[in-house]
Length: 243
Image 1 (cartoon, rainbow, N blue to C red):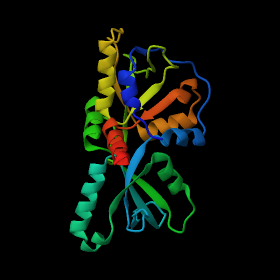
Image 2 (image 1 turned 180 degrees about the vertical axis):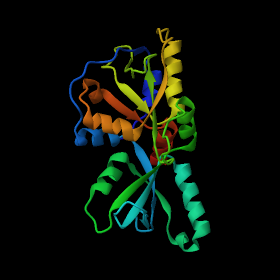
Image 3 (image 1 turned 90 degrees about the horizontal axis):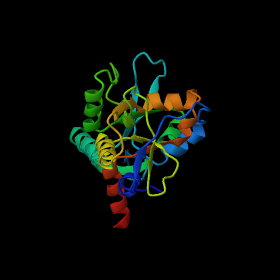
Image 4 (image 1 turned 135 degrees about the vertical axis):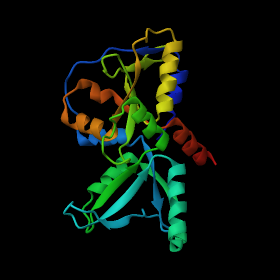
């Protein structure tokens, strides 16, 4: 069940930046997918509720035909994509609604055995991609814009820091924000709380790189990483559920 985690961070009272934890053990794929299940994503759906893909033969991959499933992190972006496709392909008016699922589900879809392999194409929000490149001019390198940025609190040495919050703080967690604006809000709340955060800043890492680290490196702190979707996206989805 999706919840307003960011609102809890900001309204819970005391926020405290903690020290990095010691190494221990890597996450399993199931543990990573469990964390992904808290992240809503948007896809194009047809009139029967199935996911709309594009059949392509990418050059130099040796795979032949593959089905591309575009995965958006903003409903506005997927709606703009649908409108553009409808202009280019009028027959698409027969379908092309917006579907919302979670990040774990699309990864499981891509792992399913099928006659035509499924490849995920992630479409991050433009503002957050630009914010990532403002923080790190090398973010993404020559990679396409499908690289998804995550934002987190870090110290002057670049170590990511967990945060504890509330009048009776729970175990601190490493929050990875899909929204730069949300990360800025938490940093501002920490500064307002009177904590010594003079050396804190916002760092950026790609979802792909972090996922690879979580599965391939032994680190106790990985168990306490949480992915925080854009709070505006969460609030919008919850409002839809109430209607």
